Image (cartoon, helix red, strand yellow):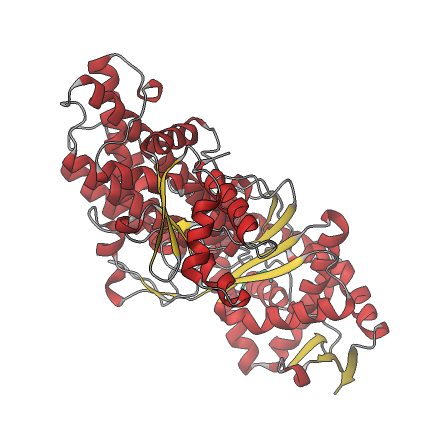
Length: 569
Ligand code: ARG
């Protein structure tokens, strides 16, 4: 058991003796080193409920059992806080054990339980825009964190590859693109054809009719239209895959909305059988107004289905196929009503099995006007953002390392650019709006991706220097905690498993990002006050072991956020 587990076990046993059946024994890190390393605040609540004096109760708990070896002392303060101080020896052993564990102490709480994460999910024939970046980056971090916690994650990219827009697009593609353009098709051309065709539907009813006919043909399985539609998907996937490749994002499944088409009519039938769907002006709706959730249309007047129907059918299919414990959806805040509606409908008809449905929504990222040196149109495309990030990082790299090989500089610039964008996104609570600025995202000395990448690279170089100069392996040395800065760093290292667990439980990668930023700050205060290579051998070896543990945790944590960690920077 780790130090924290041992301390908790001791405290819980003591509480059990003093106040049987009342619980108690949780510990949290102390905010202030004067109050010990960890504290337990349970005595107050328990005393209050039992009508006892809280300070006396705390005192009795502390004295109930002999102090375990891992603790140096346990003291009562104020109205009944129990402050615990870890022994330096136990702390050192705890950090060593964490660093030696391949999982870095991250608890396997998932125990193989299945979780489906539906994220990124861009729409075919449209460029991935800036709104999709947060879904992709946050969703992928949650995916990685849950896997690390031992969940059996199924990452599903729920592409928007079906719907009325395809009638408009097919006609636009045939009428507005030249033969050459069709031969050399890009998402940009498709988008242009769509925009023109859509505009025409607004002013020309005959055009609108023709779009509808193309859609009906597609839905009826017309070979020519199906082939055209497949081509749209292929072209879009090419672009999406290019971006996912750059972002280091992979999926287990690519089940677009089209996959669920055959299940939509039966879904509406179920809703009717359960008495949930009612007819209104020729459409089928689920009326949720008395629950404050408005009306959800499940079948339109023209017979078409919509987003809610598809999502309902998708839940049914996922539950039948995977029987997941949880399904997590990551989208922007504008879809909150949609998710609340269809979650409610699932509950009402018992569609979700044992699955807990969870919508992780995020605010939109706002980009000040000066964000792009070249700005095309008013939709900001994800790829343009990545290119710009890499170009700006390249300028920084070229300036500091003009002598490095071209290939390394290019790769480094890409890693810094991607790291900057991802971290700018992940370091904020998903539910807040971000104002993105390059200065902040690329700052080498603030709370940024490049700052953490830089800290990691500097640790690598220190470890390499030690190996070279001393001829020993940092990880094989024995840790000893001497100074307050070392102690603060070591205590924070022990919190890594908790940070990962909390980030996963709450689906907030920002918790892990905050943890890592604090880690790098604690490391730098330690490093500034404690020379490593120049210290005398015993101290040097003890300190390098601490550096090695910090480097492992930093690298491991950045990997869970999906942030690349270049060897040198
Ligand atoms: N394609 C949608 C969009 O771009 C997101 C889909 C999210 N997933 C879902 N199951 N509804 O807005």
